[in-house]
Picture (cartoon, rainbow, N blue to C red):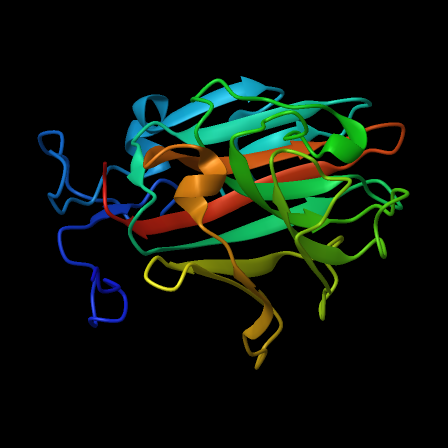
Length: 255
């Protein structure tokens, strides 16, 4: 029986993909499958660490912090950003990031974190498609800020399979505002039990992390592959927003 790497107290033979880290990491030779390496952060190596599609771009904020700008605040946009390093989806992993969905009131439509097997150029539909509609080989965790017809509210999280945001495998009302203020998110996957857990935390002083989704999902089966790509999508429609991701790190076994 395969035991969970996270459950064993550490990620053995894992890779830390510090794609949007704020601390400079040392460079080095490319990692082979099973090696442990800290890849270069976005400041040094994002051109080879990220595949950007649609409206996605790497930009800097006023503090000169690098970020992925998935949508820039115009109408009917869709963007995606994927790690070019493939991850073993049959093993446990954890990822964390900060999201800032802002400008426009109300804002739309939100972002999603995906594990997918379609490839590093995958990009889905705009508007309620959140940039992943039509990416059939995928498991998405969406942070949705606009209430379309199938949605419970304009401030919810959901797990979505097969690139169809009209059907939620699991859904939860967010305990913090997803729009207007930056928030932190953490996604943890336990491969042994196929448990996908999603946590959020406000950046307010003294805020604590909260578990909002705990869904049984086989990522490899949903992505249609044992090794796939992870990253983000976002979109706008007739209502707009700027939708940014930064401080993205992934503790995961490379494929």
